[in-house]
Every structure is written in C-alpha cells, then in structure tokens.
Length: 160
Image (tube, rainbow, N blue to C red; front, side, top):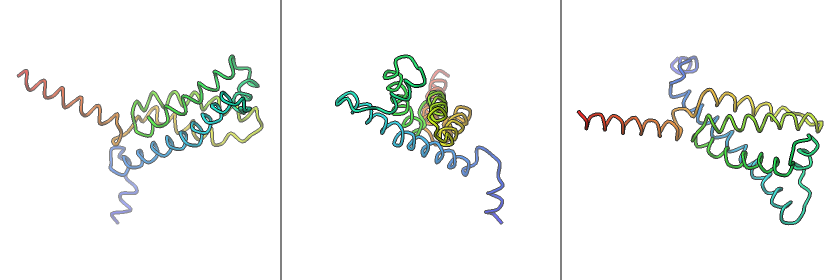
C-alpha cells in the first residue's frame, strides 16, 4: 500500500519528484548534446576544414535566414554549450530558454524539409517546462543557492 500512496503523491518537493526532475533534465540535456550539438559541430568543422557540404547550413539558407553559415554555427554552439549546462542544472532556466528558441526553429526547419517535427516539438515542450520548473533539488543551481544562503546566514550571525 505504501508504493501506491507514493505513486499518488503530488508534492513537487517529494524525493520521487526530485529524482524524476533530475532524470528528465539530465537525460534531455545529454540527448541534445550528443545527438544534436556534437554531430552538428562535427558537420560544421568538416565544412570549414574540407568544404564538405553541411546540411544544416543549406537548410538554414533555404529558410532565408541572414548569414546562414553563421546562423547554423550559432544554433550548433547553443546546442553544444547549453545542453551540458542544462544536464548539470547550472543556469537551468536561461539555458532552457535559449534551447527553446533554437529548437523552435528546428520545428520550422523540419516542416519546411518535409520531415516529421515530433522530436523537435517534444524537445521544445520539455525545454519550456524546464524554463518554469528550474533545475530542481538535485542541480548545481540548487547547490549554489543553498551555499549562498548558508554564507549569508553565517555573515548575519557574525554581525550579531
């Protein structure tokens, strides 16, 4: 009966919710880093070094973005840099907001290329949720805030 009671718990500060939040944030950050950021960076570097065609730059140009290669590198850099920070829970809301914008463009890119945008839509929904939820209990954001509160408390006690 205890397992059933725990499964019905709606308290967002419960240990189950905190672990779920960690798993969601870390896994989505790792997926975006590896599947999207890393592979796009490899394609961009091959384009710069050898002139290998870069599909992302081509698709960005087809969307009539200004400076398509620079825009493709900007999107790649955001996915490559923001996603590991998101996975660690550092500046979670900011990184999730930046990734929401980048991945929203990916929805449009998929639609224009005639591909199924479901994965990009799922990423955007998770990122939007993390903008509102923040890093959670098991994040560097929470550790940093807790550490800052302890320091402030110690300074207050010393002043008294």
